[in-house]
Length: 140
Image (tube, rainbow, N blue to C red; front, side, top):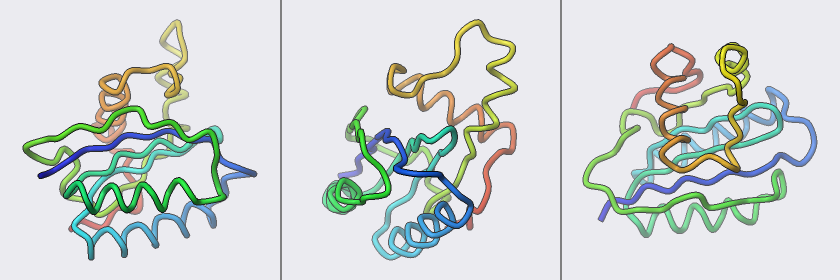
């Protein structure tokens, strides 16, 4: 059974290119071996991640993520069974949420992933991907 899990967390300390690179390399290696796909969005001290795969694999990975000391205020926004993957071509894509700044300047309210619904979160990720903002995402 395929599942999709969306969580949000706040970084502990500054989110540097080195920190993000370490997270991505580890995720891409682990996920490819375990059949997990998804997207990691980061920016403004927040991580927003979508994981997709077999429920047991995604649950085990999420448990590891909850123990990671590089972030806190972890909030599970949604986990649901799905019939197909939304982000199936990436072991772990990376989207920098700083790219939201330009879009937010034209909107009356800023995007807050902690307040957004799961559907709004997915729509925001899809919008970023559609504008070509995916980085460091080897195709599976």
